[in-house]
Amino acid sequence: MERKNNLVVQGVISKEEFTQNWLQVLTEFLSGSKGFYILLLLSSLIVFISAMFGVNAMYIGYSHVYGIYREIPWGILISGYVFFVVISTGLSIISSIGHVFGVKSLIPIGKRAIYLSIVTLFAGFMVIFFDVENPFRMAIWNALSPNLTSNIWWMGTLYSISLIFMIFEFLLILLSKHRYATIFGFLTLISKVLAISNLGAVFGMLYGRDFWYGPFIPIYLIASAISSGCTALIFFTYLGYRIRNERLDKSMELALQVVGKIWALSLAILTFIVFWKIITGLVGSEAQRLAIRELMFGKYAPNFWFFEIFLGLITPFFLLFVSKFRNINQMFAASLLSFIGIFFMRVDMVVIGQIVSHFFEYNVTDFPVILTYKPTMHEIMLIIGACAFCVFSFLIGEKVFKGHHTEIH
Image 1 (cartoon, rainbow, N blue to C red):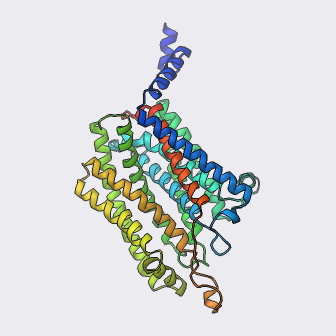
Image 2 (spheres, rainbow, N blue to C red; image 1 turned 180 degrees about the vertical axis):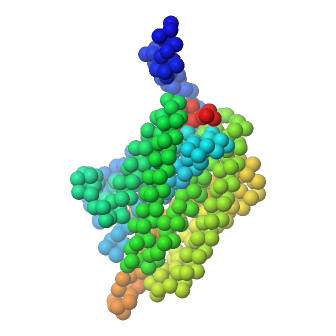
């Protein structure tokens, strides 16, 4: 009896207890509603179909099935990669406020935030896997022949390291080893901030692309990460409680109110950055002015004014203000619209930086000044598949981890 008590104190469980715990998990998983299993089956089917599109693209050749070409080598898949990894970074930043820095009002959302951060980072890796012509060779030579002067090498390496840190952090939280989980949470935060600033440098240090070049992109992505993380937390937390048919407890309501206030602040900062990016661009180089005019008044104007500005910035801020950070239904509606707007922000950022031809300054008359890009069905299906993967993993997580309830420690 004394030895058993010692094992309990030390956090070691017996074989019987381990089996019983997993039987409880299985029972919990099988207790879902009909709608839960339909959504689970549908999302898994979409993931499978999109994977087949990806395999088909690898077999036929990316240049034949993707809408990219020599002058515009980065398309919607790069936008999707940025979309998912920025959300992942934002989730890590928000979770660290409570989990690492001890703001107790945010601790209840920490466990779900870390789990979703892992999921969205995996989704980003899935998208970039099918964008690289030979992903297996890339992974091998990334380790065997590192290029320390390459921003892209640092980006992939830092995000891979942060993924390892996050997995350990989440496992330690599950084992109630909060002291050690906090250490890995801090390491995750550092690696994620370095990774996203480096991602911004991938764009901002391209001297030949005037629309990107400069210090705005890294700062923009940090602010956007916080906004995206808040969006994801409100969206998935609301859905999680609806799926489990539970009411929000007081601690979770308080946590979402704090997240909503952080979100509103980040939206204001993001709007400020976008405004000054446009203003400075309009008095910049000729190539920069052409890109911004195409964004604001050309074929990409609906993307910018309706999706990016109206749905992504103005409407969520208005709904948060009207909700007074208390009406969860209005906050959820804001997060849903914001998700749509955020994706178009990523598309605009990636594509607009490439649409101005390098040849316009040489007065080459038989080559267009403004280039065009249209995503193909293969590219669209891969983005849909990554989103479906997030939904599938979210549903699994809500059941297996019982709603990610976290005790304040």
